[in-house]
Each structure stands twice: as C-alpha cells, then as structure tokens.
View 1 (cartoon, helix red, strand yellow):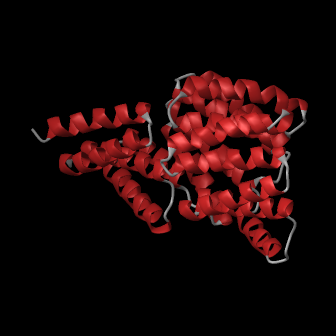
View 2 (cartoon, rainbow, N blue to C red; view 1 turned 90 degrees about the vertical axis):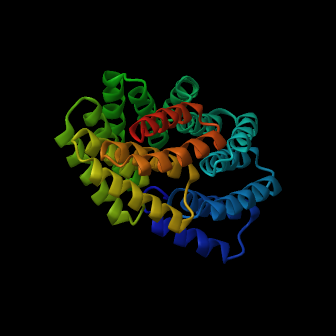
Amino acid sequence: MVFAAPGEALARAEELLGADPSPLHASVAHQVIGIWQRDFGDTRRALAHLRRARELAARADSAEREADVLATLGVALVHAGRTRDGLAAFERGVARGTGHTRARVLYRRAYVWWVLGRHGEALEDVRRAVPVLRQADDVIWTARALTLRATVHLALGAVERADADFTAAEALWDTTGQEHDKADAVESRGLAAFRSGDVPAALRLLDEAEERYAKLGTPTFMLSIRRCEVLMAAGLATEALAEADGAIAALDGIGGQSTRKAELLLVAARAARLAGDPQTSLARAALAVRLFAGQRRTWYETHARLVLIEARVATG
C-alpha cells in the first residue's frame, strides 16, 4: 500500500503498532513506516524503523521476512550516503532469502546499483530477478523491475530498449492500483521523451506526473531533477536553477535523502553555469563532488568534477 495510498499505509501501520502485534506483524508495520520515511520523509527516522523491523523479523525466526527488511534497509542506507553498509545489508539479504523473496531483494539491489551509477551490475541483478518475478505472477514487482531496467537503458543511451520496457511496464501498471508507481511510470515516459528529443512532450508528461504525485501528497525530488534537465535543454537555465535550489531547500527541510541532494546540487551547478553565474556553479559543483565522493558514486562524481572544471574556466 505504500506506493498505492501512502498516507493510508502509514496510518494503518501506526495503528497496528498500537495494538500489541506479534513480532512478525510488528516487523511489517515498522518496515512500512521505514519505507514511507525513506522515500517521503526523514532518512534518520527511516533507518531507526527499519533496524527495528529487522530485529523483530529475527525474533519471529522468519528468514524470508528478514531478507525483505534487509533489502529495504540497504536502499535506505545507500540513500543516506552509507554505501558500504547498504551493500553489506544486501549481501545478507540475498543470502537469507530464497526464490521469490530473493528476486525482490535482487531487484532492489539493482535499483541501488543504478543510484550508484553502476549500470552493468544493475542490469545483471534485474536479469536474474525478472524471470522469477514473472513465474510467480508478481505483477507489481515485475512492472517495477521492467521500469528500472528501462531507466538503466536510458542512462546507457539505449532509447529503443527503454521504450520497449516502459511500454511493457505500463501495460502491467494499468492492471493495478499502485498510484505512486503509475505516477513514476508517467515521469519515466517524460524522461524517455526528452532523451528522444521531444522537449514539449517531456514537459507535458512531467507536469502530468507532478499532478498525480500532488494527489498522493508525496514529494517529487527526482521529478525536479528531470524537469531541470528538460528546462536546460529548452534554454531555460535560470528557471532550472530556481527549481533545483527550491527542491534542495525542501529536501533539507524534511531531512531527506543525501543521494538526491547530491544529484540536485549537480543539476543546480549545471544550470548556474548555463545561466551565466559561474560562482554559484562553482559552489554547487564543489559540494556535489564532496557528497558523491562520500557516497562512493564514482560515475556521478566524475560528472560533477567536469562541471566544477567548467565553472573554474568560466571564472577565469
């Protein structure tokens, strides 16, 4: 429910915890709250709930439950900038889980590889996960995996492969009530339209996705990054800088993901340089380089260093 009706999922999880549930059910409730805080709120609170969820899963003596929580915890740790700890959690999760559960763990590790810019590893984990998810007739997680694979294809410049996966995923989403996932699919199609050179379609799809997120009351930091890319391509660098800086302030206000902050700083640095403000570009790029380095995200760090060099040249 967290990606179908986020507010209702959070309320029901908190209600369940107030009813003295069994360790197994309490583990699920803490995991739900942890996912909500990880993606829409305070990363530190997310980690506290997810560690508690893991403790309760171990107390319930459920290896599958523990594996699932470890995957959620791994994503949260990486988003908090603690990459080594996050990858270690995934190693334990892959080892603890079997079959269907392990496939879900592999999908989430693939997502983390994408966040880290390690696209080959991302495609390998998705390749292992998708057949198992399909065999289990797990529509929601198959659609998530196809969406992720499409996003990785886009990062590698394979637009046609991405389009095929996005189309297949959207057909699956249409059979579900996963409203947040559906909004994410529209956002992804906006990115694909941009990569294929259709800026007006990209902006239209991103606006549609934002309207869907607004109905759910969930933040849209990734969407802001993508809109900034499109605005810069359209020659609207000043507007892109304002959007990025506004998103950074909002993210800081809720104690959100360190990984997203670094990406927003990078896009702000690029926008500032294009807007003729090299000093701002220098400051944003330098901070982005430090964050990416701390997060062990070499691919992104290299991009940020390029913008930093360009800003230094622009300042003489």
